[in-house]
Structures are given as structure tokens and as C-alpha cells.
Amino acid sequence: MKAKDYIWPVVGVGAAVFSGWLLYKEVRGLSLDDLVDSIAAIRPHQWALSVLGAVVAYAALAAYDRVALMHLGRRLPWPFVALTSFTTYALSHNIGASVLSGAVIRYRAYTSRGLTGGEVGVLVALCSMTFIIGAVLLIGLLLILEPHVLRRFVEDAPLGLARGAGVFIFALLALYVWGSLKGLPPIHRWGVVVQYPRPNVVGWQLVVAPIEIIGAAAIIHFALPEAGNPGYFVVLGIFVTSFSVALLSHAPGGLGVLELLFLTGLPEMREADVLAALLVFRLLYLLIPFALSIVVVLLFERRQFAHGRLRPAERRE
Image (cartoon, rainbow, N blue to C red; front, side, top):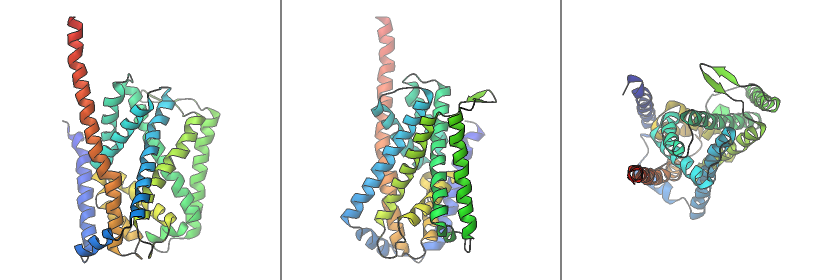
């Protein structure tokens, strides 16, 4: 392995350790009994709604790959695409360095169905772009409708400036849509050809990415108690911010980063209640999908190995 192969894992572990240290300073007065009581206080209907949020999020994540394949003009069976997407995100969210780890999983899966390495690279890039579009769209919307969310992280932030930033974000998205409608020519850079997405692809990007983020944020919102709960849109704003920072940090599972930013963004709620809701999120959005994805990978590799053994035998016959 080359030195660059170690960069993102080291960055991720470093970010997790630093965030963990800051988090420890934040919650060192919290007792384990308080946390256990907060988890026990989550009612069955809250669990059911959080599970529904996780299902919605992963269903939308499966559509990321479907949209990218639409851009490539490739058609693959929907169950295969959904399973590949689920496995990719379940592993990459937990491992960290999501673009790199996701590329490896997708390469193994999609090249087995005839896609080239270049096509897989475009698919990975478009899936990342889809998430960015969804996050940016929601951030712009929240800055316009709920600019007070910004003050949870930046004290005395000017609300007028926040709304102006939201309008600017929507202007950028409008340019993106305009470029698609105009059918701008491909971009040639460093031997790579980047084709501008068609209007139907852009339309799906603007739909599926916000739905995924909305579903993931709902897991936490429904797991929080009603007392002191600032409402879904505030939780959504904190989630978009914290999850984006966690992805940029490459910390495995956003460990420590999510907790620190949520505790900062929800000062009116008990620390134990916030951490309990985040444990529910980690269980439903990270840990259970992670365990299932490992099984999927093992079964896939077993099948590929069996096919590899059959081919020489078939040639001898």
C-alpha cells in the first residue's frame, strides 16, 4: 500500500479521537443511569416512527444509484441496485472515507454486471453530487424558513444574512437546473469527460436526496422526548450540519462528531435524552445495516468465488 492509502483512515481516526475528547468534556458529569433511563423512556410508537425514518432513508439511498445508472444509460435489475446501494452506504457510513470505501464496493458489484471502471467512477461521483445537492437544498430552505437554527452554532448570527445566504443557495441550484435544461456540452478535464446530467436526472436528484436526509433526521426527532423538543425543522437543521461535518471529517460513523454537534445545537434538552436519541440513530441507521451489509458482502464474494471456479471447468469441457 502507498502512503496516500493511509491518509483518510488516519484523518478519520484523528477526527474521531479529537471529537471524542471534546465530547468527554461536554458530558463528563452525565451518569450512565441517566442515559439508561432516557433510552427506557422511548415509547414503542417512537421506536416505530424511527424505524420508518430509517426505511425511508435507505429506500432513498437506493434511488441514488438508480439515478446515476439513469445518467449512464444503464439498466440493471432494481433488487440488485437496491442491495448494492444499501451495502455501499451501510459500510461506508461506518468505515469512514465514504467516497473511497463506497467506490470499492460499487466497483466489485457493478463490474460484475458489465459496467466499466470509468462508468463506476462516474456513478460514484454522481451519487456524491446527489447527496451534496440534497444537503445544499435543505440548508438553503432552512436558512430561509428557520434562520434561527444558525444561532445554535454561531451566537448572534445575523438572521438577514442567513436568509440572504439561503436565497443565494437557491440561485446556485437554479443555475444547475438551467444548465441541465440548456443541455450544456460535456466538460473535458485531465482526460476525463464529465457529461452534464439530463433534466430528468436532475429532477430525481432534487427529490431523492432531500427525502433521504429528511428520513435520517426523523430517526433522531422521533426518538427525542416531547419535553424541550424544539421541533422537527430545528432537528433537521442540526442533523444536516452535523452529518455533513461528520462526512467531511471521515470519522468512522461520525463517531463523536454527531454527538458533539447535537449537544451543542440542543442546549435546552437533557444531555441524556439527546445521547439516547443518537444511540437509536446509530442502531437503526448505522449498526443494524452494517451487520446486514457484512452478510451481503460475504454472500456476494462466495458467489463470485464459485463462479470463478466454474469457468475453468466449463472451458475444459
